Image (tube, rainbow, N blue to C red; front, side, top):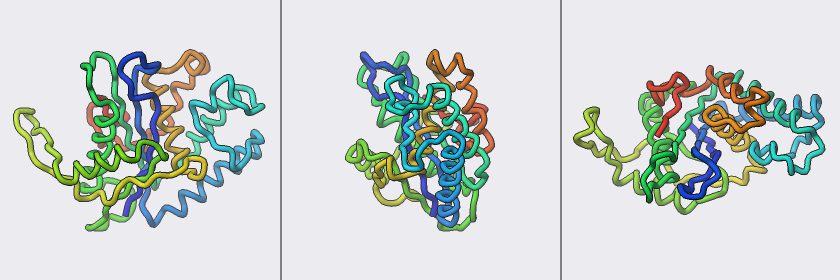
Length: 252
């Protein structure tokens, strides 16, 4: 069984939105390596505590963590370094894989479903990579997958994945016809987690934030060259998700 922990960056609005993009990052780990992942994430937090004094149980929600109004006493440049060190720590975990989806809202027609299209693409890439057995870990013939995400929009996600399990038309290479390929490898509804209580979801949040900053960095991150932090993750990115991007990012 493979577990995918997902979080997002940006918002799904098309009009009057503060963000030009919406990004999803999914960290995938095999069940047999799940304990290793949790222990390694705890080790990263212990390192951050010893280096910066940040509490072991303090939630790191990347976008809020960098805001000027964040209640922490740590200077903003130190907070950015904490995000950088999180990324560096993750990049050394060769038993995980990260799938990334980005939707550009520019030029999208009114009524375009940013949320649905982003999650649909992520579910489909998870399904495809499971079927082709391209995730790191044991290549069991019957391995399936399950999704864990922050406790938001649960009803919409349940409806989406249930629909894809019944009706999931996939365009042929030429784009003129469709094949009916319902989801089979992904099981159950997405499991909702309070991100404060889940280090893997927090890690996915940091990845999604750095993905967004890679695509469209804010002024502070660009000034501090933080938009390059995402590059550090390349050894563990699911580059098979898209052959149109050197990092495997699915751009919609």
